[in-house]
Image (cartoon, rainbow, N blue to C red; front, side, top):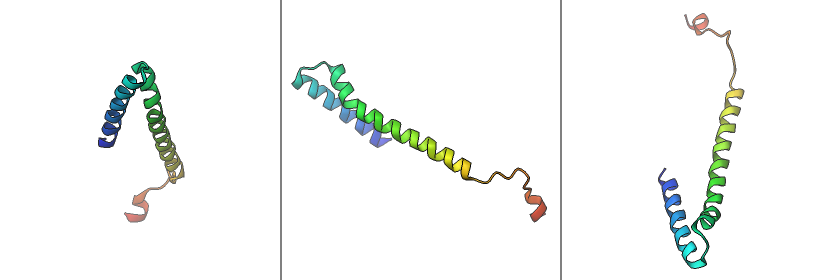
Length: 72
């Protein structure tokens, strides 16, 4: 979470400085700066969802198993 806060703060600073030097609107510079961060976060989130789903599919599904049968 601290890393995310740092990245957002850094992005805001870069956006403000770049918009002042380049003369572009803040919205355009914000999109240029934040788009890669958003894409990276979305990629990581989707990968985590896929990994969780794959792990759930790989786990054995034994509805007939009853531990009491074997362990009393």
